[in-house]
Image (cartoon, rainbow, N blue to C red; front, side, top):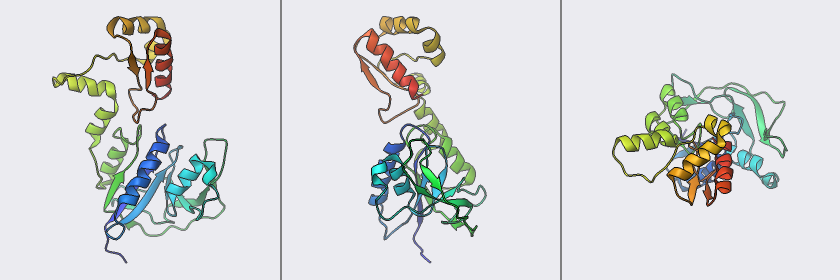
Length: 247
């Protein structure tokens, strides 16, 4: 038995910043002192499935980049629908609460993990001391994961539910900044329903209020995903379309 603190690192996620999260997680885990901490990697694939046991980071990296499929060792990941127990704040070990083992495979679909026939046996839960969320974007930085961890009574690193949710929604964030009297650059919040049904009116409003060049971005995304620099009306329309794809 080890007396080292068990640190769960959560990465991946069900959003467009999935691959960015994988890179961040590898950096974090390589920086953590393995002589001091026992690192427990926890992956979330693009369908929202939680992966524990084996090497979930490698499995998700292989799913994102089929060129890595021949990399050894194979991840040997165990799938768990949700590896947190709401009363004890504990994480299953490599076989607990899993319905099958998983490994990455090349696929043209969005389902990157292939299910084997082996059924996993339920075993006692293992205690986690703290979780480091390394998720980017929706369902990771927006308070959703933080709320889940609060319910499960699991300690975690970073801001809480309210700060995460306000920071993720840039419209709400800017309203909070304005209420606090903080200086901001001029901006306009575009509602999806207005853009879908009144495109020309939206473009007119932006051109009346702001000067080119302008930047368009999703209100609920980060890592520069969906950001465009627009120098004309045509580029502005295209930029708003791109932003809408990620929000």
